[in-house]
Image (cartoon, rainbow, N blue to C red; front, side, top):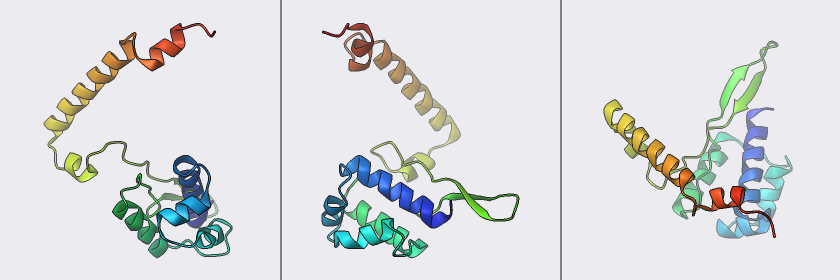
Length: 139
């Protein structure tokens, strides 16, 4: 899989997840013709770095869920061909990644401790949907 194909896959997954598989809805959300995205997804239009940057910026400006299309991790295979290993995972928090990156190592460790404790508390809560789904027999 090359970089452009990895971007297409990431875009397709994003549309499937956030727009119920509708390229039309995605196009309307970005004020673009859906046919443009159909051409990109069907390999009729190149999916170069400039387009990836433009889409990431437009999505961010409209405050839609983040997507990462610009810098996939690439490694060479044994024949020297570039192979896409993975795309960066989207940032899962509502605060900007830059705020986290400005924290010291000690502050990051404290935050990690808080989050680990919060997750353990949520997982052990008998009222949580996740726990209830495991323990409640089907009707």
